[in-house]
Length: 151
Image 1: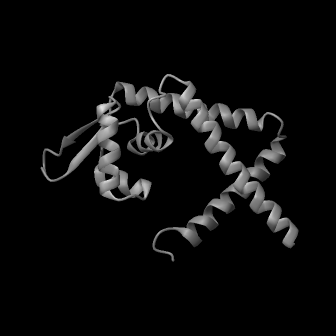
Image 2: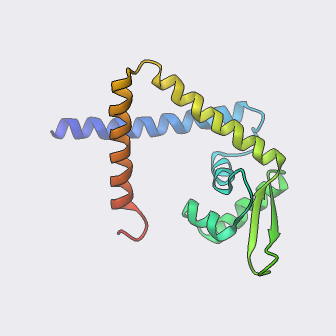
């Protein structure tokens, strides 16, 4: 059992690192080579439609408002985001994607879907189901054990 646990750990670490490297490489080679992985994840957290409050985005990314403010400022300068105040409460700051930000979002989403399709090409339907069940369990356990507030 100990050997299996070591191999599972090694595989998880290796897969995580590989996905990060592939993602970083694809961003740097593409049309949006002026943004980082962190910035693309900020774009994802804001989402394609409408706007979100800064608090909602910071919570989704599990970062401080100060860290988010710095990231949003950079993305605004680069033309990916815009900031506005709420009409009902001027203290609330909303962020939304510009046309360029939405395009970056769509291209990054396509990258993820293409990566999953390429991975799944050699899987049988049964293996796909087993993988999905295993990933759901892993995700659930990680959220239960390591989610903020569960420590």
